[in-house]
Length: 400
Image (cartoon, rainbow, N blue to C red; front, side):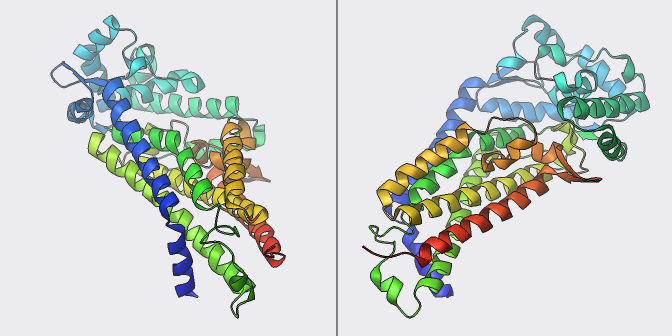
């Protein structure tokens, strides 16, 4: 069976697949290099403005000055450094700098501190990077304010009951403080462009898998396949397994390109910083790197669901061209309908890469299930349902 799976897998790597994968990689690379080169600029350690791709290396070097543990001593020194910095005076004169691709070494620690004040209304920008807060007088007061803000944020943007908030409040109280801070802009880019370009995987799958069960495709179904000793049942399992291996392959190609390009441009430093430096209201004691891996895992689950939808369309249509068209329409609709709020967003596999995987919870009684667990449960349900649909259609498959 392994040999058959390998042969079916090889059939999927045809010219159309090759063109689709190369196009995906080209779009990702060009998207990153062109946009990041044109849009971004940073204040370096000498107070100079560095533009383009070089701005990330300059920012990384400057950020060495603000690495550390955000305890009371660090916070007092940070306030002094920022208030006497070129960065502060420059931001005061250029009010739109941070909102239009500008970067400063103070972004990571200062944004985290400002979140303690703004909570759910926190955003990037010059007006939310200052450090003129009374709660910065002591470490205890700062982290007490931060934890209360997290609780208020969760209650404000989610329909949690009072009892559920009490459960989440206990998780907030168990957060491992004080936090480390430093540079993570490369990882921030990785997460942003991963989310932005994620739909490209769906497009590739719509083209590449549409012929897997088609009768008019070289790698599709033939009369010999259906009538051979190892016919319907075995062939179905082989094709379905090969199809899912193919999905995983395409996904890892996409991730590999993202990692390489973002790593080359801005490095992947900051992997071990606490997730709260990036996802302020995250209640998991994990690192930024682990958080990104969870999003990558959710992305793989979403791709598997989409790939199985395409396989179902392929076997229903039996015609590759028609399957491509309907798969493209399905992909477009799924991506178009993903912009919803609350728990309902988790029904859409395109949202399995949402930051909510790290910040949202679904309650089953007194049990708080993180959204990344919900993504796993939904994937198992969707794939099982789609497999049943594909299998039932395959049993009735005939060549006219």
